Length: 260
Image (cartoon, rainbow, N blue to C red; front, side):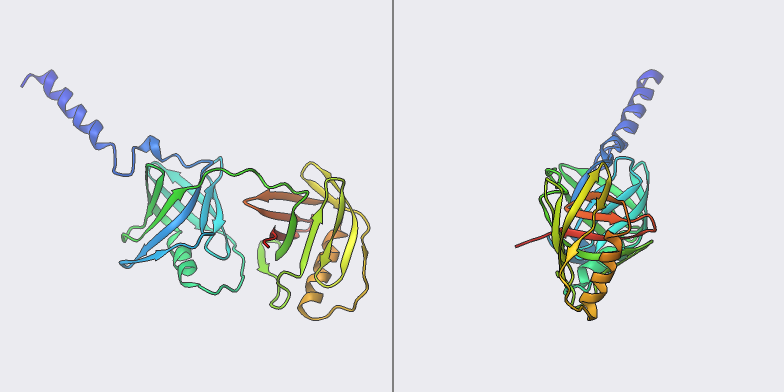
């Protein structure tokens, strides 16, 4: 075989070898994508993901957010060709009925994972062969801050995010109307007032509230929210149907869209 023809054959084989079953290197771009977690394969067992289990990758490819199945997911990422290294961050601490999938997902979604992507499916595989199977999620219209009924499910203190105390779940909720009027419950007492939205800043005016004596878990939540709403401008973000409000001192809340 002539040398030129032999060299061409080698280059052709090399090019073919650069494409994996999960797609070529150029196909595994994940920035700005969202995925639903379909299943986990752990130790030869397959665990089916609940509907809320999901992962989204930011536009820079350095952060992942989502849901382990009950509690929130956050992680730092380093994507290198067809692999990613995942460093888990803080998560919420809500009590969950079914923890097997959630715990398995949290253990698996860390460290170095090989990426495979093809035909709307994503596979993340650990060194031992355990893997996460995901499917792409069609984009949804963004949730608006105003006009939605927000139910407070977590309190934020710096880097710590904790679910509201047991017994106070679903008690604190609020709505901000398009005209800036705000109303809801602080956890025990009902309130009304005004809210001013200025870009990413949200400032509550003086609130008028009922005057029931509040003790126990509901009282704890009420005390935290009263202080937060009165602390001045809050930074707000709405992502994946979750509202985060954060004060200048790092305290804040997370709330979800109310479900009938």
